Length: 116
Image (cartoon, rainbow, N blue to C red; front, side, top):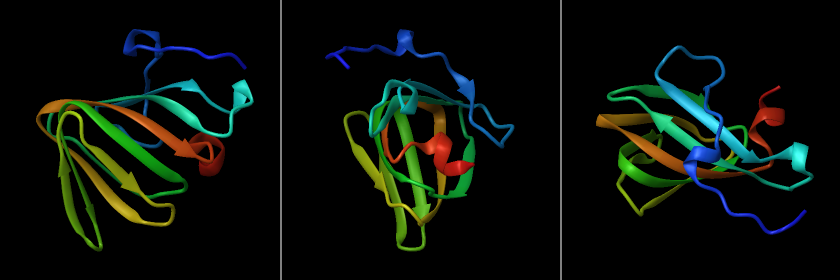
């Protein structure tokens, strides 16, 4: 695999699996590339939420808007340039705010194969 650079326009955004909200993910690097991690972009519509138990360690960098992550240990809110780590096994609710949000993410291991 070679060194590569990505922008959000490179991502093919698909609705986040198993839900009907305005939440989309677009992997750019994943198990199909032979990488150990998944890298991609996420897009959240205004005032949407997603609740799940994390199947992977997930690092989310907020690029635009605001995201709040509620877990048993409290709520973390992040805006542009801030990073949220959601550990594997943690039950979380990820909620966007009134303007929605754009994020970049890195997961280990691959989130698609961990969900199956």
